[in-house]
Amino acid sequence: MYGVSRPVTGAAAHALAAELPPHRCLLMPDIRTANSRRIAFLAAAVLLVTAGHYLTSLSEHQVHDIYRRLYYLPIIYAAFWYGLRGGVATAATVAILFAPHVLFQWRETPMQNLEQFLEMVMYLVVGGITGALSQKEAERREELRRANERVEESYARLKEQSRVLFDAEEQLRRADRLAALGELSAGMAHEIRNPLGSIKGTAEIFRDSLGPEHRLQEFTRILVKESDRLDGILTRFLDFARPRPAEGESCEVAPAVGDVVALTAERSKRAGIAVEFDPDDGLPHVAIPADSLRQILLNLVLNAVQAMPSGGGIAIAARAEKAAAFPGDTIVRITVSDTGPGVPAEARARMFAPFFTTKAGGTGLGLSICERIVRGHRGSIRLEDASPAGARFVVELPIALPGGVS
View (tube, rainbow, N blue to C red):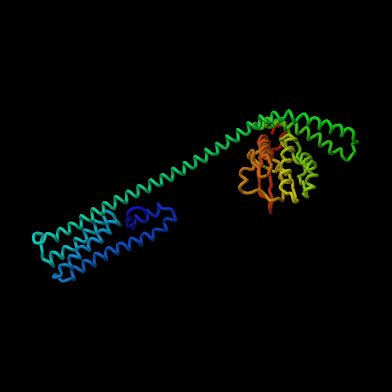
């Protein structure tokens, strides 16, 4: 507590307790105890000195002089503890107690012994001056305390503004990276499309040369389809900062998931990972192109595979659920769960930020692209904990309504 302490009792104590927070209200008993002790000390000191005056022989002039000087101690303490009013009140009490000793025991008047009566005046002067100075010091300390609180509040606001500025700076840097990425992708698209066309043409030759029942026919079909999908990705990659909105295209969930499972089957098998797919029967079409859905699921499955180099399991589920916030009041919720180590808590808030990655050599664009595609089709994607371990990504997409409106 800054400044001169004041006794707080009665209604003032209740008002102060109502204004203080709960943890500070606990200090009220300590304040009352300290005030009681101080008042008891002052009363005891004044009464002891007064008793000494009245009980000491009048012939002991030097002892009485000592008692007169001892009165200053409770006066100064009262002024220091309780300010101007405390000092003056104690001085007046001392003067009232000392006056009968001079008038009736010494039987003196101001005309006979002016020094004794001037001593009473000095009690009031010392109590008043000391109390005033102490009160001024208390007010100055209170002003300093309030100024310190204002400085702390200003510092807190400045810290918050600095955080906002740092966030804005980070967003600007991210925008610069995205701009650079757009320029780079424009040049990459042309260079990649040429060998991609050759790969697709070779795959078509293999497909036509193999019989319809050949065991590799399914892989050649996937190779051609994935080549077409990569060509579409390159086109949309140029417009990464402004993802293409839904335009009435829709697809079935189960075939898209089946393609992703088949495409990653060999890699999952080598890593000792079992992939399970559990869809609901009769799932409605979702309002997203098939190649976009495959791209999202492929990113999620490959991330799960990379998170479990020592083996594990991946479970893919698809359910139709009611959700009033989506058109048609129905969504399809697709979950991709793994039994890996999960995602660190400090990385969760930035999982979908461009260029953020927890993998050595990762680009940090996979999940960012997935989020932009999902949001571009009025869906949502989020990360959840998988029990008892691992991670679960949840993709929610609106169903395709009749007439191609989603």
